[in-house]
View 1 (cartoon, rainbow, N blue to C red):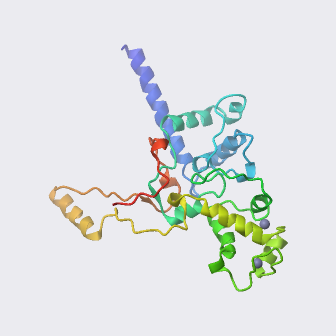
View 2: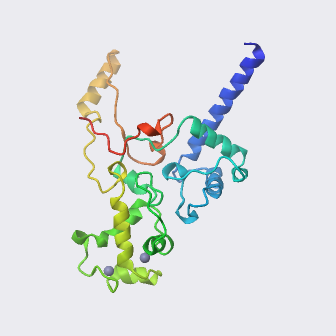
View 3: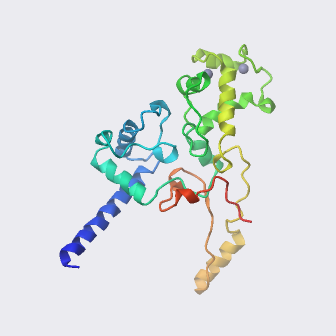
Length: 261
Ligand SMILES: [Zn+2]
Ligand SMILES: [Zn+2]
C-alpha cells in the first residue's frame, strides 16, 4: 500500500475515534449531559418512525424504536448525527449490560420499553397515563400501580371508577376520568416487563462480586506481583450511562438475568 492509502486509513480510524467520543458523550444520560446531546435527541426524535408517539419517545438506545437512516427523513438528522448513528450500528451499541440494579431498572422509560412485548399505546387508560399523569419512567408506573395491588391498597382506595380516596381525587383534578383503570393499566404494563429489566423482581445478591477477603488478597498479590483475580462484577448500579455496551450482538442478549451458578 502506498503512503496515500495509509493516510486514508488513518483518517478513517481517526474519524471513527471522534464519532465514538461523540457517542460516549451522547449516551451520558446524567445531568451533566452536553447541550448538543439534547439537541441530537430532538433531531433523532423528529426522524422517528411516524407510527411512534412523540410524547412516548425518550431515547432510542433505551427504547424499542429507531429513526430512519434512509429516505427523506435522513435530512432531519444532519451529517453529524448520521455519522454517530452509523458508528452505533457498526459497533452495535445497545443496552447490553448483564444485570441492572433496581435503581437503574426504575429509571428506564415506561414506553417502548426494551424488555416488554409490543403493547399498543392506543387505549383510553394508556393515553391518560401519557397525557394526564405524564408517566415517562418505570418508577412512575410503580407509583401509580401501587394502589391497584390488593396487598398495597390503602384503606381508602376501592377498586372502582367511583373511588374518592385522596390519590384518586388528586388524579381526577389532573384530568383523569378513571384513576383505578389507569392504575390497573400501569400494573399490567409493569407485569409485562421481562425479569432482567423488572425492578419488582427481587434483587439477589450479586454472587459474582468479589468478597472483601478476595479483594484484600488481590491487593496483596498486586503488591507482591502475583496473580490477580479479575473483578467480575456485572451489575450496572447507578446510572443508565454505565449500562451501555458496544460490540454486543443483540441476538445473544438474554432477557433473563444472569446469575452465577
Ligand atoms: Zn382511589
Ligand atoms: Zn388516568
